[in-house]
Image 1 (cartoon, rainbow, N blue to C red):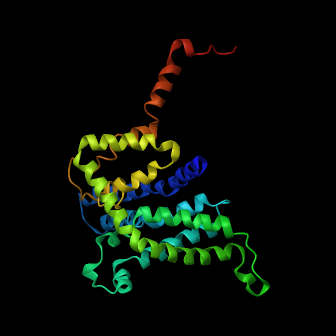
Image 2: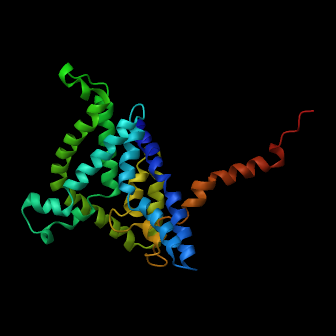
Image 3: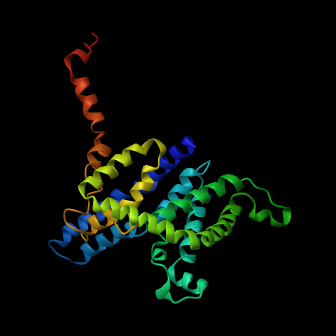
Length: 274
């Protein structure tokens, strides 16, 4: 289990690594717009938001690819299929039709059926299907669909079953996530400190990225990164769950600073070999 969670944590870094591109595009676009809100500014902003608005899909594809045995493109395709099936089946219009109720009566949870958490679940299931079926041989009449070609097909049927389960499970789960997020939000800076503490605590298991998805992305309405980059958040509040992370992630502080200090001490310096 520990090995699986660690692989999951490493795989989640693949879609997360795309965020700097979004940040640069949106940041430069906003800076340009401060001088002239012309087509260049809107072009750059649209490029960055194209990444931010599709993060759940990127998580599904990236996680499916990273968790597959040989990191094959068929696994990534299965991640795409998995996410599209469940997000389309559970979108409010589909739920309204399936349950025979008015669109206004659909649980608000389904408005968030295409979030990062769903992307993570889709990616994990797609990777599991790939690892299980990518070497499967079918009878000669169906041999075209053997092996890797079988994986997206199986994944689509599995995700239909998952969608049926989530039709009943997702609303209470979503409500629990929102309640937890509101509780942490209500604690202000102390809550941000708790978030940072549990983020570091969960790193050995790789589950810190699942925690991040609640606060950094639009799972429970917080969307700290998206609101910060698009300048639509609340000053002094938005960005609070990212504060302090970047010196640690980019420069390895405080461990990096301690290592530099120790290596710089005179007694640790080796005499050059003549």
